Image (cartoon, rainbow, N blue to C red; front, side, top):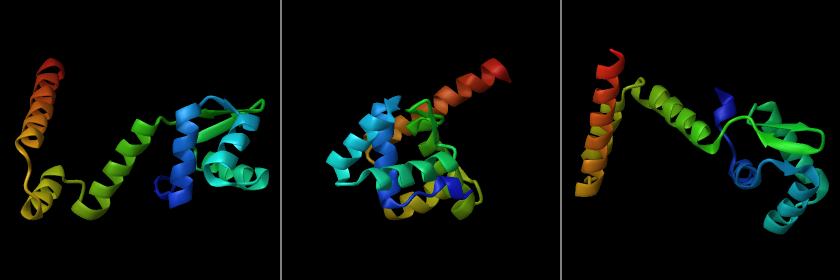
Length: 125
């Protein structure tokens, strides 16, 4: 899905919006001018792109997030797994750990996630 792929400036601008949303368009223009040196027209062009991708909505002079940053990042991760590892988290982990050593803390975090999901499965399954 193309909506999950953002260029560098689109990503930076989306992060700016997420940090301040909901935000007035006037305030967003000022924030973008300070952060990126953009003119009003550039800000509105970028905002229109992100709204067309379903990340944000502009209504009554305010911009609100339709998707949280966390939801967007989770969807990007799912898309990456799907495109590169057939949707398989174990295949990804195998590829990752073949070149990168996991720290004890990372192993503990992964084990905690697995245990959490086991418990959720037992509750719902």
